[in-house]
Image (cartoon, rainbow, N blue to C red):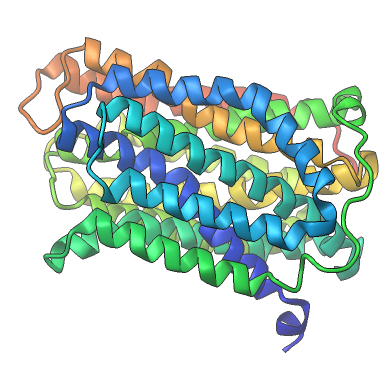
Length: 410
């Protein structure tokens, strides 16, 4: 009952919709445009990276816009949700009326612009919410609800196309319709949260970038999120071609994200007992162990990969829960009214996905890999090395950075 009064469930629902517009896009969209319209992996990777370069300019401006429209925050949020829903429908449910690559770029620009604006407002409001919940554990409590909701949103969005396909429905059209309905639900769930005191000052990037711990946290977020971006971008290709298990993509994705969602509150509880930094380090080690075993998988090893999905999913539950809570608590200390801090956080999170697309998809294509066909052993080994080896290396770097970062109460 207390959680209902505090509307933590509303934060979970809103986070679920934002998550469904983020990570699953990188799972479904590239393969969808390759299979349906014959777009090359290199072209898609270039577009995705180009959109992230746009964010370098756009996200800071969206942070300033969030401050400028603070008096009409509820209306601005509703408009952004509507734009995101319409663009998602255009991306998946409408045959491109022009060049598919251009259509892909325009629709994703709208999706990600709305996503960025919503994320900045959502996390900035979350700082104030955490204060109301109690300065001691408020950020961890809110993060448990928020990030668990996000993980559940990713779970549902990741497997929806497979479910609709099994029902003989037009899977991505149905996906876009359900997403639009979810946007309406999210708007209703959070409508009362945008009332009252909102961010009233904008100190810009200065307070955030001048703070050494904040800079280090942004760098850790960049490096630590990259493995998830890599594995998410290549997941469908890995299951279909390396494991030779077409049709298992949906169940394995569901297993991965359900494991992450189930583990998220556990990591939050552990962080309250031993500290967020120690809990996060434990999760990073677990991720390395899990991905290292994926290096040795081949055709028919679907069951072994399911175990890896369980372990790596549990590790991701910590990444998505604890790091945002640590950063939000730092913002409360350094720049509680600087929405640009959350613009930086949003940019870092999205840039990792773009990095995976621009760095890995062209390499995979250059190795001779072709989706949905028999591939050479060289191409399959390249896929395996990119999917499992690169995340292990990145996690080691993230561990070193986190160990060297003095977090104090964070």
